[in-house]
Length: 85
Image 1: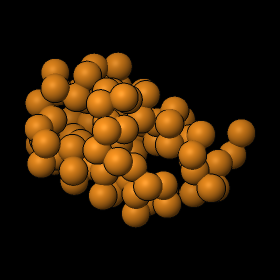
Image 2: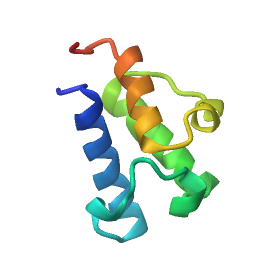
Image 3: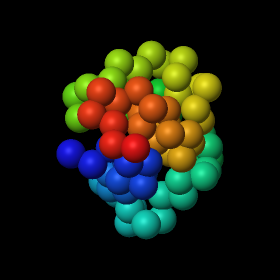
Image 4: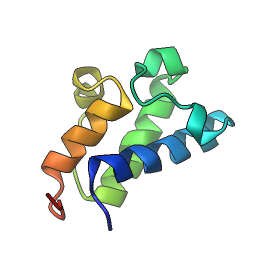
């Protein structure tokens, strides 16, 4: 599995686009989650999915410290046990 930052962003855009019922390309990876309409329920769903997919434990606080897809992708890339530099 590709754990590059770019691949993580694309996967998250597709996942959130599906949840929000919008085109994945319209999910701005630089926009804060609250600006995208991500509420706490969607944030928890995202946390569960990225933990399962990438094998990285994320605390809810990690979303506050990394409030957009670019930041989450960078964090996951750094933490991923399968990280490819």
